[in-house]
Image 1 (cartoon, helix red, strand yellow):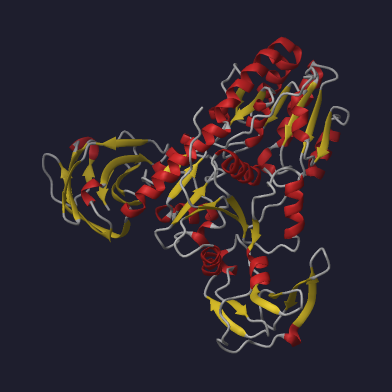
Image 2 (cartoon, rainbow, N blue to C red; image 1 turned 90 degrees about the horizontal axis):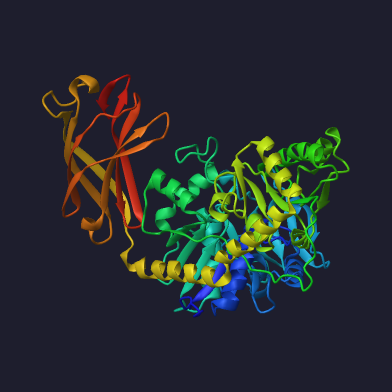
Length: 594
């Protein structure tokens, strides 16, 4: 197979932290970079932007486990300025003396100074001075939470060698962007990957044509009932609000991309690249699969819904005496899960094995792998299981399992939350080594679709498209819709309440004036649709559109909706930008203009 070349430039993957024992998102970040280094002929770098006292030790452990190649740089923003200082040298104002409010000094794992903690009177949060080996401070910043916006500091102070104030940033995002610029030569192009949703508000947008910001979404963005129009977590709301400022917004599945597109518009910077898998070589002497063994590899957190796996295995043991379930992973639910195991009398059948970096070895001998999560972005554990020939039994959730396996061929999909059917499928596998053998071969063949070559080819296409589209980017500052009429197609005064069943179709005509930046408004797309309030169903409607300078003239004859409660949505999509408004609403059988 011909190798695919990735576009030239620096490849910077950003995260707040990269814990060696972290789950799928971190492992996917590291795997992508290893694949880029080996198959894409680039030299990726991993950047962490959170304060950690054991950055060096983490890097060593990651390299020891083979997750971070020796030649791949692993940098931390605090360590960078600790070692290099600031280019600014002249005093830039007075620095407040906090020595009277000093609480303690914290040290690194090797015993060297790390930071000084202050608690000024009336301060809501501690203030930190980060220090060099000689004890001199180089940075002052208040403690903040990456989740809670109200804690984000509006002052990040740069300190010179003598503890003198030499500069100040107005936000942590300004500091983060400065670091990335400091790492590059003046004319270097960079692809800046964001795998953390928490980083998006601080790094999007990033000004300059040589910067291409790429965000990869690793998890589900909506809450129950998990439709495209379900409520969005505030953290993901910040992400969705900034899609227009990204050069590429990448989901792991087409279903998630389509759900996001339905919510805010299918812009030109939305792409799909699934998580890759590094196909492991089969052991020289393939051990037989244990007909009594099932496996789970997951964080012990509520999202993984491991109580379902335990409950299902109670049924399995009744039908297949001697069956065992090994659960690998750690997390906050360990004590509750252990209590659940004991309460069901499964202490000899279900075992919490804790975190084990070699947990994947168990998949060579297990007869099935269970996934019981409430939601996922695209589970890495299932595709890794398939790569080792271990058939997966998974809840059919958003998103991922349906895109990875074919029900009845290389594993089983069961309705989300149906632990009884989950148990039945596990029983089928444990009772039939022949079924396991057949599904095992099919699972390994399926996993090969997500190998390094496919990963690099997909990313090369996305990154080249992002670079090509950069000069064509748009920005919608505002849009104003002026309706000439919204009335029954036959008759009726403007603005009158319209009984849709009595009056039938409605005529809509008007002009949408667009205030924004970008060329070629005639290439923009305008779409009209009824949105069913109850079901979320979307019914597209015919719309005649003509462009005129910075405006779009529109006309439509709108058939009444089937739903008793619905809204009429008008959406503008202009390359990477999108805007929408509700034009009218049907409520109680009557249509009114908004």
